[in-house]
Image 1: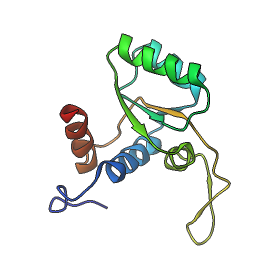
Image 2: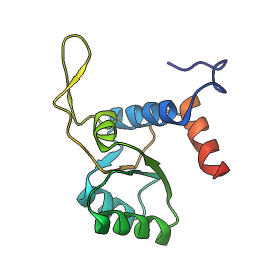
Image 3: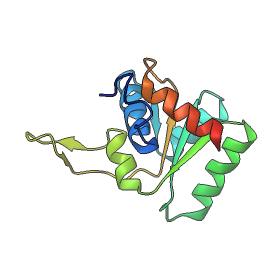
Image 4: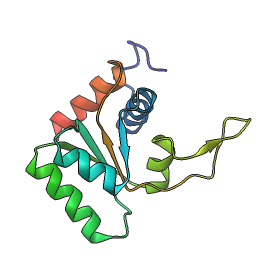
Length: 129
């Protein structure tokens, strides 16, 4: 868990992971193309996270176009398996390790949940791009 002192040392991946976890707790995530496209089209989205290794080019084109049309911030991550794990599409075993991870190429944040240091880091990253 991030504290006030280590905000500068928190990287974007860690911040994104924590923001997705907080959003998942308040049911603020739309996972997958169908849910994501609906949220983006209704302008309910605060942030869109897209995986770079998505194998369908039309999928990427649609999500990027919807984000651009409605001026919704978009962050790209490397791996869709990691994105699936971060957005709760997995089982957690007794040791706390994720099992049966389902890949997810797009996640939309509808509700951030609580304000956190990770959200500030993520917003700074988006503004700096």
